[in-house]
Image 1 (spheres, helix red, strand yellow):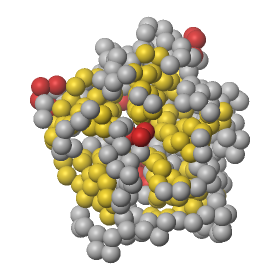
Image 2 (tube, rainbow, N blue to C red):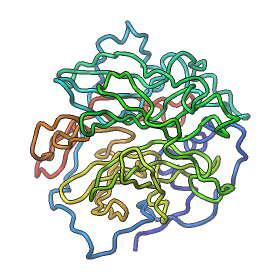
Image 3 (spheres, helix red, strand yellow):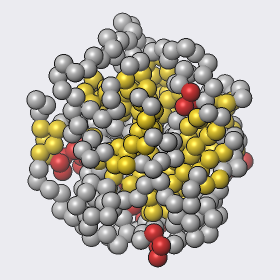
Image 4 (cartoon, helix red, strand yellow):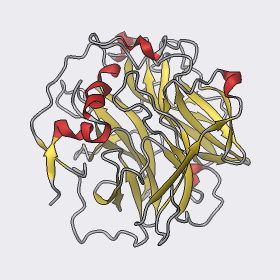
Length: 387
């Protein structure tokens, strides 16, 4: 049985105790503080654990390594890209018509309406509120090293669940269309109950858009149970895999200020839903996540204490490895054989990948700043590359 630790220690273990104390409040507005419960938690962050003897981890999932280099955004000055601001939470990378496509949160022009003021802090140091576009910056590359910022994802229609921002954008390809899932921030609090409305979806024929609503309704809302569930306040960070013919949408849930975030899953037969929450939620601890299919199962990085996990059914997980220097945070990869990542260019994924890491560059400081760096990452080599 995994060693167990107290819940209040988890986020501090990931980000440092001083930063952990500040991480949730910036996104809180009008929410009563809830004292962290004095309960024990699994040190590997797994609540939905695969039973011993029910799974087989591929033997090459060891000897993990990571190398990073600065992001080369060739038109950074032209678009006003400010590397001293918060950039992070890169989407999965899509390959389409000879180019790679990616989306990233960028606070160069100001902060998201989803980053609201906590009464005890002045969060305006993150910049003014962005009003004319979302904070999701769309960029492309032909060689994976030189990137061009194209534009910000447009806002939703006035009064809709995403007319103030589209946060935590994740895009994937399926049967000739591109689906963008995200957290919608709205001005229509009267209709949606709060500014951070829930998870929405738009669809396009091309990664550059134009994007049209898959539905005028949210794909998933926070649980309406009076604050009892892990996702009863806010849900965000949608990420998908397709497994056994079903769509599994993993998401991060927040229950209240000061309570560490957890990951749940909702399942659907169709890509746009309806999605139904797994009754055993939450399945993992963590703050966001990246996941993808690999061989007869899937890999999950829940961004909890630098763990990577394995699952064969998408519900029950087994810990594989923990490493501060080897496991990326809040980042993403390009998987060359997975059709969700665009036109497949390989018959198997291999064990070497590239993508983006989002390191925290000023631990313990405010304003907190994440950076986007290009990353090479892999596993299974007896003499892995050195950072």
